[in-house]
Length: 223
Image (cartoon, rainbow, N blue to C red):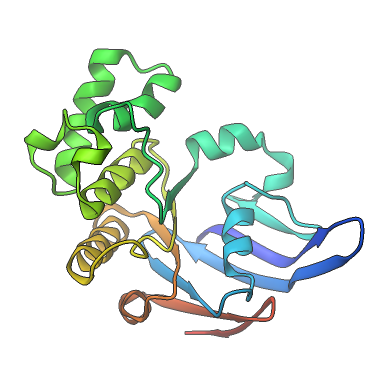
């Protein structure tokens, strides 16, 4: 059963001078335990679609359903905080917090006490394959691949089964990128996450369970 349904979604960017239709009736479904890649040229609408599914935007027409409930009916702040974890190309770690503190921070916002949050953070950092000596390092003391793994640990600290990633290997070398791909695959296949990746990386697309190809705001192929 799908955890996320995109139903005839239309989205427009409007300014004083013009209206641009970015998505033109997109429909697709996403299930837990699968790894999805959304591919397409710049301007095809794939990043806008991810933003809509992650609750950062709302459709102009159509609906996005999370477990059967339209995102337009949800408390979007809570949805983003508890259900829709996002990993970005630029990592977006807090520079004045250690790796452990970065991962613990979202849990503390949800009321997990500091000691318990740090204990869980340590376990998650190990889960993404990083050694204990990373725990107390600041982001600028880590490599790009290490920072991205900390960002993934922070994302899955939310206990959400929806994990979105926007060009997660875009700032990484090939070896580090492959580590991130394998980690995301493991989270889908071994831990039951619904992993949805927007990417130009053909290696990610080659390993995905399902590839959705977009062109000019429309879904043109799914396999």
